Image (cartoon, rainbow, N blue to C red; front, side, top):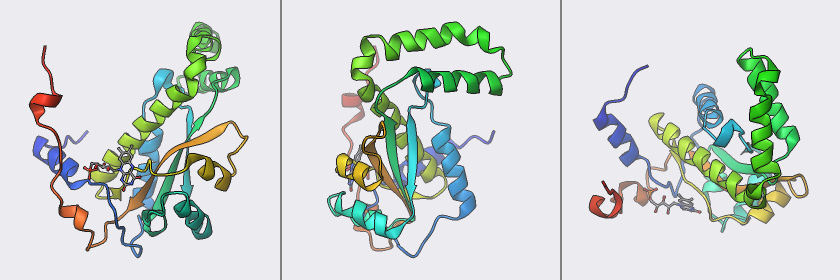
Amino acid sequence: MNKLSNADLLATLEWRYATKKFDNTKKIDEKTWSTLEQALMLTPSSYGLQPWKFIIVQDLPTREKLQAASWNQAQVTDCSHHVVFVIKEKMDEEHISKFIEQTAKVRNQDISTLEGYKKMMIGDLVNGPRSEVISEWAARQAYIALGNFMTAAAVLGVDTCPFEGIEPKKYDEILGLTGSGWKTVCACPAGYRSGDDKYADAKKVRFDAKDLIIYK
Ligand SMILES: Cc1cc2nc3c(=O)[nH]c(=O)nc-3n(C[C@H](O)[C@H](O)[C@H](O)COP(=O)(O)O)c2cc1C
């Protein structure tokens, strides 16, 4: 593995900013996009359960509808790839079994050795007290994917803008998710900054380290 230098890591994180204006003539090439897709898929999740889907909206009329459901933010139509982070509303045995089968297959394990793990997850997330707040739990996983995606994109010189300024229920309607058991949490347009986005040079506003980092 090639390790980034400390200085390069910080320069990359400084370079990333919430892009307000994308250059709508620039598209992310296939190889770079495929790498970012894999970065999304490599995001860690609680128990490894991946209670999410990532919907990449390419169709312009659909994007226009989504823009209207995103405080009319122009990034939705100007970006190269508009990613919508969608979560499973309820955890169920079917999803957990699918994950267990995948684990046995990928790791060439006897599935019976995973029975205890499966029961534990079902006891916790399907039948336990956490089942009451399961969509909060799933949303937290989606935000990890959002963060991972933005950092991976920045490493590859791709701009992004995290989006909570959306109407999730309208997104669900537009994307045909209503009643499917899946729902929108947040979104992230990705592409390349426009040369005249004044926010690109704005200084980062962060509290002092002494207020944020505590050693005990
Ligand atoms: C979860 C989340 C939701 C956000 N929603 C929006 C949004 O809807 N539109 C927007 O322009 N910026 C949005 N932002 C961007 C923040 O305002 C921005 O990240 C913050 O001011 C720090 O600036 P920087 O990302 O440029 O360093 C969001 C950021 C996060 C993390």
